[in-house]
Length: 141
Image (cartoon, rainbow, N blue to C red; front, side, top):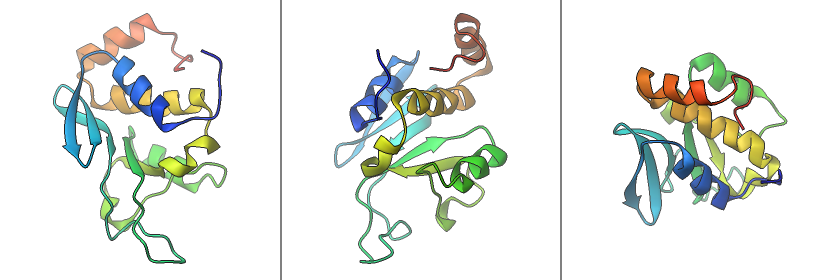
């Protein structure tokens, strides 16, 4: 599929394309994608820790992606060219947040890399090794 600006539909498509994925329904039509019973991507309900700084309104469109480490998290949230962020609620948690309304700041390929990394860090070592064996080490797209 040709690369294009990322969309919410791509989150669902890419997450579901990973092996051994189950979908937990979540609440308010906000699915939780899991591998081996561990969440790797989920759509978050509006919470008081993620709000519009101008209006104080809770963001209704936050998506959470697991990342391999705190260093990976910091690299994503500190890159001003990327739409990722975090909140104090996620201190010490290996994940980053992004608003669905800002997904188009990423390409579909960039989004796929983030989702695949999220899956890899939550999948069992055996499943991760099997997936990596089928894909080029530099081609997480």
